[in-house]
Length: 227
Image 1 (cartoon, one colour):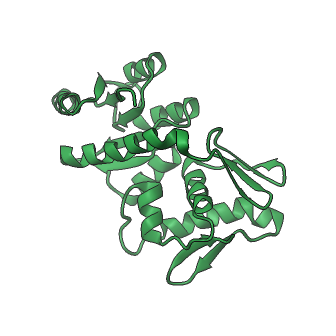
Image 2 (tube, one colour):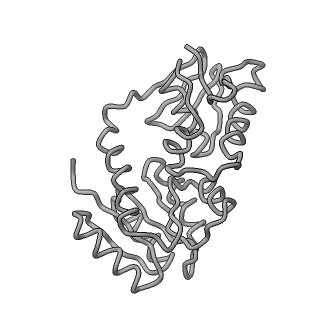
Image 3 (tube, helix red, strand yellow):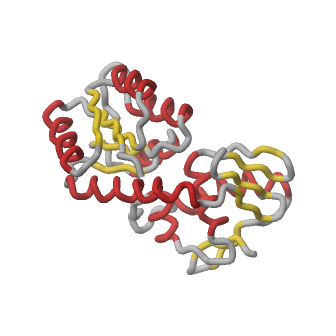
């Protein structure tokens, strides 16, 4: 696989330079932007495989950038690096198109581990089946589109990843912990209902309008799309 190119967006020069040097030492080509405008310009000029994005940035904040980057490139992994550590902050990040979320302060080893998860996914991209089906529900992993009965269903980035995971494991019950790890790359705090909320989001879009059931709940175990 070609060398991984990373765009790092961090307005703290000391922290930004430290992270950049560590990434370079680990074999990643890394460009550093200190504000939102520069980051946006670099993103559109370069071909980056991964984006590391702070939220509180001068000129253009991380929320805006994340949304713009995701609309421009549906596949590039975006990892938020921020001091905002509340559950709602994480949910907002995922809604804007982020793939992962790391709260400051963090160990560089944790960041490298998260990056490695995405580099492995990038290496496997060509081998993943593009089209996944369940009756008249069709998900295309390459075009990031979902159709039900010939009608396109608009999903958020996390809704899409959740449905994709369930379809890839059709016939298998997936626990909440597996879903949290595979879709959000984090372990949600005990007692939160984030996964249930997203399952309901999907059901409201791919089941209720069509008076059909696709996702089944196995009480105490998890969720399944049956064969």
